[in-house]
Amino acid sequence: MSSKLYQFLKIHYIVKSQKECELKLNDEYTKLVGKATVTCVAYKIKRIAVENSGVSRQKLITGKDNPMVTFKHGSVVFNVHAVRALNECEHINILINHEKKSMIARPCADNDRNALQWSKLDKRGKVAPRTLSGKYFTSMLFYDMDWKLKDIVKIPGEVVKCNDRKILVFHGSS
Image 1 (tube, rainbow, N blue to C red):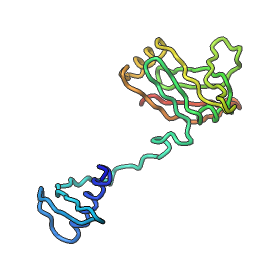
Image 2 (cartoon, one colour):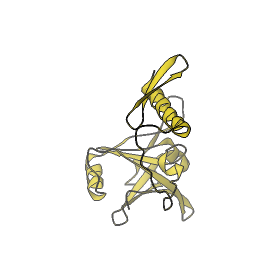
Image 3 (cartoon, rainbow, N blue to C red):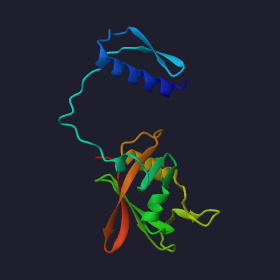
Image 4 (tube, rainbow, N blue to C red):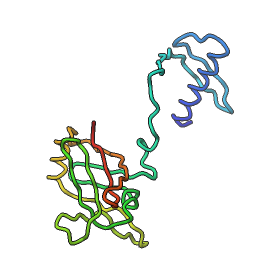
């Protein structure tokens, strides 16, 4: 039996049993589940007040269908949703605001002096993100944002319209 299934059954059994009778802490309980016997231990659960808590938005946690950028020491990678958000342009400029700790990716022409090629065509002819390399750039960015060099940082982005052009804004920290 997998550990995830066992943990689910363990938690489910304890919660179900608490409703039926009073469990003694740290005592073992067994229950027949299908053809298997599951042994559970009752633990004390702390109660947490949730009155003043807020619900986090799903789009900030998952990268599904949302622009994201991933920073590692030496590389920067945007996901395919970021590339699609800017109409599959091939080159961008990266602008950094050190005071607000944010980064902007804006489309640009390929002959621009500071143009970075952030996308490419894969074998099937579809647009795919391209890894941008730069140890000096990422070292400075990690220092400015107060990140550790060994960390991998993923930041969600938002599409903003600026002067009738779409740009991506990524907020590094508050």
